[in-house]
Amino acid sequence: MADADAALVHGALAGLGRALARIPGRALGAEQHASSLEPALAGLRDAVEKYGTVTVAVEPGALRFEGERVYADELGAAGFCSRLYRDGVRALTFGRGLMMPDLLAFALAAVPGGPEGESDAVEELWKADLGGIQYTAARGDRLDATHPAAAAFAQEVQQLAARASEAVEYVDADATLLDRTQPPPLWSEEQHRKNDPQSWSEVARRAALTIERIVEEDLAGWDLEALQESFGRVLDEMARRTDVPALVAALHGVTRMGGAHAPSFRAFVGRRLADVSRLSRAAELATAPVKAAAQLLPAWTALLPDDAGPALIEALRNAREDVAPALAAAAGQRCASCPDDVAELLRDGPAAVAQAALSALPEPERGALALEALANADAEVRRNAVPLLASDPRLALERLAPLLDDPPMRAAAAEALSSSGAPPDEAAAAIVERLSSSKLGEEDLGALYRALGRLGGPGARAFLSERLTRPAKGFLKRRRSEQEQLLAVEALAADGSMSALRLLEEAADPKRGHAPAVSSACLAAVERLRSRRQVREGER
Image: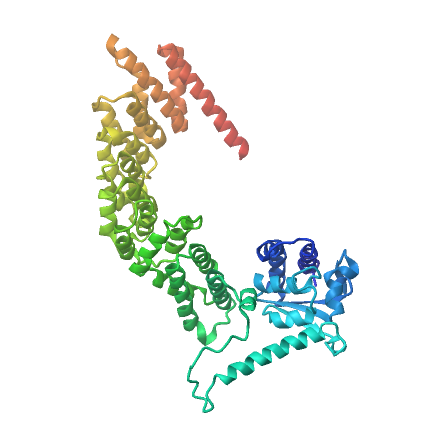
């Protein structure tokens, strides 16, 4: 065994030993003991996941794995190792499917100071009937007539036999099983409460986890369809009982599931979850006053198939306002199956719903559907739709150029156009047209110049050069001309090409007669560009 593998097993067994050693000194309930055992359970699961089974030898005061001692009980003869050995346990085997109830039952039976610490360990392990933990007892140390626990064990067996005999008396002699009265249970109510899970949630969680593990380990065989149907019914019952935490855990398990059959299992679950009535119930559960409720719709909708858009739209119509955006986002992701409905959401939906659908649109449909959002009454939705119009470079100019005439959208449209991938000279021409003919505010003016700088290209540089070198004359125009000169300098600096650098060097010449602020801006831009180019050449 490799050192890393040995360390994994040794760490798991040592962790188990330390966890069991802490239990006797703590007068806590089962839930508190379970929290102490959680780290040990995680370590053991990692070990058995790698090797299938892990077997450890039990010695007085120690645990030994493959001949090497991996845990020494600090309590010595008073510790759990000595108790197990004294009562006949010689080996413990941990297998796949190990769960907390099994480990907790083992701990309570094994530790001397636990609730079962005064009885025989072999007896308690036998009664617990653990699924993920097996034990081997030495024949010479099995119970006999002189064993301290033999009398109590024999008495319990007699009581069980007596109850069984009483139950048989209620059966007719001809075996027709006419139910005259309910036979008494073989377990008392106290034993039921102690040994039978009382929480439906825990039973359902374990059932879902068990099915997921069977499928993930490719052990389903011919039973895959039956397991899928059983899992679906467990989910339905969780939803009916409003057991949101268990439902979220089960859905996350399906999402993370591996194995050859995982895709088909996920597809089955996704189709079932796409049922409109189930989706509506999920929307209701997402409003439950529990922490896990916030995770329910993301976990649920992540499993839905691509054609679930119409079902999501239907569930959205009756959903509460606070959960509607999550359904809208899921519908937006599947807009190919319901394009008209999503378009209506973008046009007429509340701001939060439209924004959620808009942000989730897939790449192929993004530009066309974002056009619909421009009709939404909310200004923020419209502004957020503008960058999406640039998703297709072939149509970006056609979609964005008209928005350059819309004052609320102008700055966003210019920025989107400059990064759209549209032909630079054509995009620059559309921006130059607005700069030449429109009376623009300072914010819009700056946005259009910055867009020209990002576009670059001969057309943009020609316009910027002209505005820089030939400012308008006249007292009333001087201030505006100087402002545009400074904006042109920043735009050429953003261009960063050799042509832009030469234009800035020429404009920085004092002989050009520019205003001091313009000359200083040109010099600063030249220095920045030269430094940037030197850095690039040094990196090469």
